[in-house]
Image 1 (tube, rainbow, N blue to C red):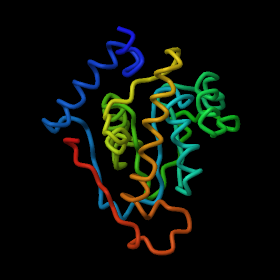
Image 2 (cartoon, rainbow, N blue to C red; image 1 turned 180 degrees about the vertical axis):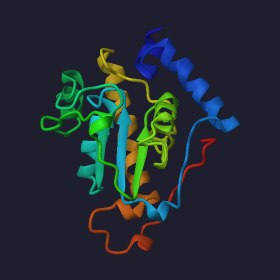
Image 3 (cartoon, helix red, strand yellow; image 1 turned 90 degrees about the vertical axis):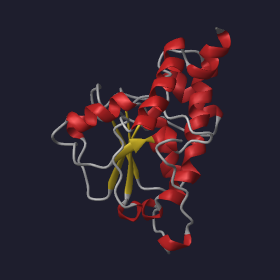
Length: 201
C-alpha cells in the first residue's frame, strides 16, 4: 500500500489512472485539440488552483512559456498549498507569489489551450458554456512517461507530492516543442520540433 500511495497518491488515484487510460482508448476522454500552431498560451486547470495547476503555471513561465491557470472549485486569491510550496522550493521553484483564480474570473483569450489534470476536469470544462468552445486536453499526456491522470496531492504524503510535481516538470519541454507559438518571444516557431502525443498515450 505504501508503494501505491507514494506513486499514485491513493488507491483511488491508481484506479482513476487506469480508467482514464481506458477513456482515452475509447475516445471518451474529452480531449479537443485545434491546430497546434494556433496555440499562444497554456492554461493549466485543476480543482483548487493551489497545487497542480499552480506549480505547472509557475514552472511553464520559468521555461519561457506564456501561461495562466485557474481552478474549477476555488476562490480567487488563495496562496499555493504549503506542502506543495515546500516541494517546489526543494526543486528550485518559488510559488510564493501564486494566487488562485476561480474559473469565473478567468478571461479566455484567442489561442488558449486548457490543460487539465483529470478527465473529470475536461467534462466540467465541456459543460461550462463560457469554456466549452476552448480547446482542451490533459497535461499528463505530455509528461514523460505519459500519466494522463495526475492525482491531486492535496493533503497527501510528501513522497507523492514530490513525484507529482516531478511528473509535471517533465511535461514542460514537451509542451514547448508541441506548441511553439506559446513560447514567449519565439523567434521562429517552425524552428522548434513538435512532439505531439496521441490520445492513446
